Length: 261
Picture 1 (tube, rainbow, N blue to C red):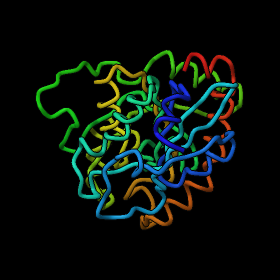
Picture 2: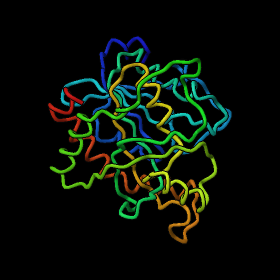
Picture 3: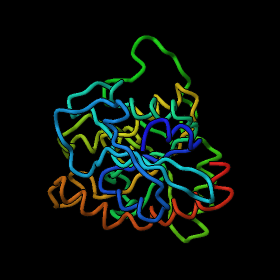
Picture 4: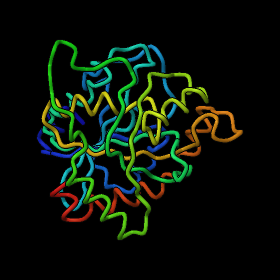
């Protein structure tokens, strides 16, 4: 598949899949794919397991839908602008609605590993922005209230718990210390990860509607006795991605979800 074919497909909505969540793709009708590198997106000196870096053209409710399997991160040694290059590329392809997913660590007591959290707001603790150069934008409603409402309603119909919460983004690649998790909790964070926020900032600067869902793959450091390991996080995310797949399939295969997301 070529960039021109993607542009001609006319998809106005895209999903970005986080670590270990590639199986979500399996439920959607695939029409073809292209590697991120073929789209001119920046490479990385470090390969990260769980991110295929491939853009798929799919179909849902008779409408085209783009699904990006994999993303870049600051901890790979690239800039914030390079991390957000995928979002700019999607915008150039005609995307105006962006749903982001990630694997995250749960901080709030009622959020259990294997569950989902709809992101209502975020804390950018990555010390960077893709908008360097004095581009001022309002972030008071970074996550579209109408889209969040539609996702909550769809989850309720399916019997899938979908609490809302605040996502904190740190640079990584190391996981947080117990003291850092206590700090994040005091700042109002409900979950923590190393992605998503820079993409949201870039998307809002481009006028895109945004929604985001965290798959809570583990309890954050210090909240249990388990040591954190990337392979374990990937395995847990893949195993627990079924409710996310079910929700996204139902949402985008519904007329309302396809048209109004």
